[in-house]
Image 1 (cartoon, protein in one colour):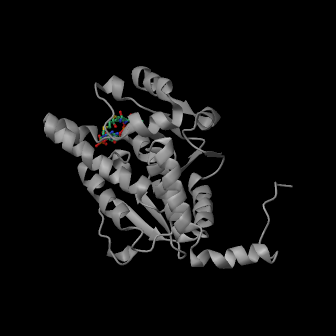
Image 2 (tube, rainbow, N blue to C red):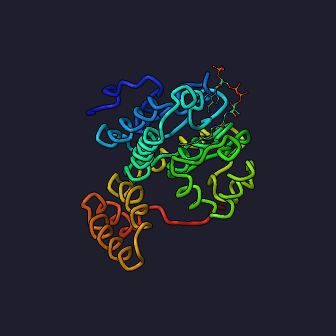
Image 3 (cartoon, rainbow, N blue to C red):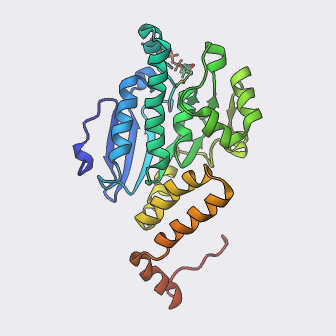
Length: 267
Ligand code: 1HE
């Protein structure tokens, strides 16, 4: 895809703020943005092509009061899938979420209402999560007779740890507010609109050099999958490329000649 207008998506709305920050809106509010198979395919197309189409940062949001109600349970019930079919469907979910996590474009999820089941798996593939006061997190799989299939055992486990993940799945425990932030389910809790805050963060990310963001939003996730020895080597390789990019020379010169902003605590 050469530009944002080349995407033809039914369940997702796409806008550019004019500065390369894309606003990606899940658009099935009447189904509480439950993820059906078609939406997963659209996510794959979108996140595979966003960088080449010029996205500098992405705000991920949803129409209606709820971010995402997870797997489309009605579609799943009606399709009466075989084990092989659901296995393959889960791999499509992984394809979509891996394209997000490893794709190199910063993704900031603006959360609200239900972020549950596959909706939490989806949000966990973003790089930054902003919650508002309506946001709540749960993994109702246990109560539905299901198991997570979109990466919760990995990403949600990484965010909150194994014991809390198991508790959420066994008991249906719901986290919200400051407690959810303290546990790591979101990095920000805002009083107003999570979209406004996510947009401000995305615009800030978009001021970074694209290669730097690419490294932050792909290399860290890859490196975390490696042994410490290989991770250190890979980090050195990435730094070799990023820290010698010609586009960074201007920023380094500004520091050297004392015109660049300094890093100071808030007044
Ligand atoms: C849905 C879904 C869905 C709503 N699949 N259609 N996820 C869950 O267990 C969460 C299921 N959803 C809910 O608990 C509630 O819908 C909400 C708390 C999110 C919202 O409640 P509410 O009162 O605003 O809406 P509602 O009346 O429950 O639903 C409105 C419509 O959305 C209704 O459709 P309608 O055609 O009858 O109007 C619902 O059927 C539809 N809807 N949620 C399909 N999830 C890779 S494995 C991942 C495994 C999982 O994700 S398990 C967790 C599934």
